[in-house]
Length: 338
Image 1 (spheres, helix red, strand yellow):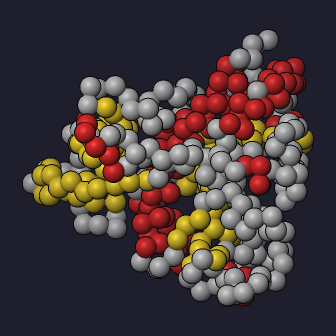
Image 2 (cartoon, rainbow, N blue to C red):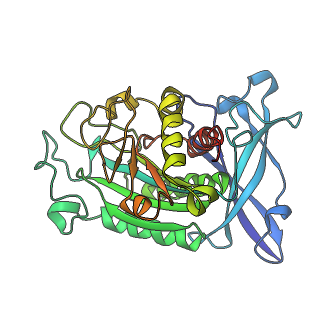
C-alpha cells in the first residue's frame, strides 16, 4: 500500500466565469486508484460562492481521474459539485449537458502569459513591434526566454496525465499561445480542457507568471483576442453528410445565433468585432476556409462530399467547454436528417 495524493479539482460558483479550485486528500491504495475507488469529499461551499455560511456543506463527486507526474504518487481528480441532498449544484454545468460518445470535439485554447500586469515580452510602457512575426514564431525576440519552457513543460505534464493534446503553438499576439485538445464525447473532451487549464495555472505559479484567459485583455487595440475555437462532428456528419444537410445545419446555427453567443464566453463583443479573424457578434456566416466567418468550413469537408468536421470560431478563451459542446449538440439535434 502507498499513500496517494488525490488532488480534487472542481469549478466554483463565480460568474460569469467559473474559477478552478482544488485541495489534496491522502489515501492508501495498492496501485494507482480507479475512478470507482475514489470517495466523495465535502468542502466549504460558503468560501466558493456555492453555499451560505449557515449551511455550507457541498460534495465533490469524482468524474475523471488522471496521473499527476509533478508529484510523487500524484492523482488529478476532476469532480462535479453536488448539494448535501445528492442533487447537482446549480453551478454544476457538467451534470445536465447533452452528451454523445460519437460526437467528436477539438478545442483550440488560446491564452496570454502575463507578468507584472502585461503580456510576456511587452515593454513596461507601450507596445512591442506589431503583429506578424509572433505567430508560430521562433527566437528570443519573438517568444522570449521562458514562455516556450512553460508551454513545453505543460505539454509534457498533460501527456503524462493522458490528456489528448493535438498540438501547441505561439499565437498571433506577442505573449499569446495555444494548445489543442481532441476528445470523443462532450464530457470527455471538456474534462480534459478543464484539467489542462488547471495544470497550466498551477505550473505557472513557479514562474511567477499568470495565465490570462480573457478574450480581449489588451482592449480595443490592434492586437488579436483569444478564442477557443470548437471543431466538431457527429457520426452522421462524418459518414453521411451531404450539401442539403449541411445547408440545413447552417440555417439552424444562424437561427440559434443568440443562444450560442450566450454560452460562448463573456465579453465576446470585445473580440467578435469583424476584425482580427472574427465575424461580428450579431451576424452569422460560414465560408470555405474563411477565418473571418462564424463557422469555417475546411476544404476537406467540401471535397469529401460535404462530410467531416466544422469549426465554430465564435467561442472565446474563457468559455465553458461543457456549455459550448452542449449548445452545439442541441442545435445539431434540431436538424432532421434527410
